[in-house]
Image (cartoon, rainbow, N blue to C red; front, side, top):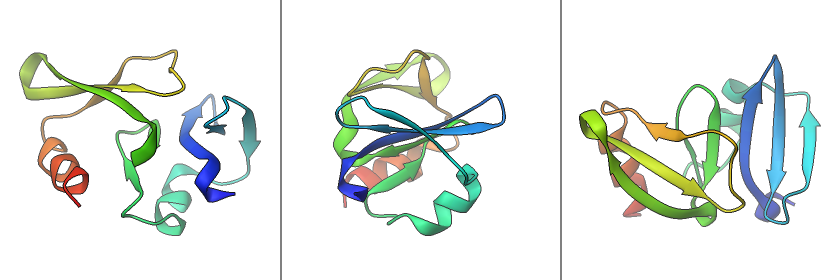
Amino acid sequence: EVADIAYLKAEDNEVMLITVNNKRYIIDYSLDQLSGLLDPDRFFRANRSYIVSIGSIGKISKYFNSRLDLELIPKTEDKLLISRVRVPDFLKWMDK
């Protein structure tokens, strides 16, 4: 179910779907394809490697050079940063 998706992560030419229960599935879509398929009110393309669900965002912190650092639930292995050029779009998306 789409409601079970916490985030999607691109890594080593594969896209991994991570559920809210931390189950992981390899899927046959690129993040670009998924960006067009998923509800933009619920999912945000955070950077080149991640699409996040609004429900998976646990904490947002300011980071060096006007970027934002996201902590997701379930936790990611990577530091997930929103670039300073994407920050206004991200904040607008969060306010919906």
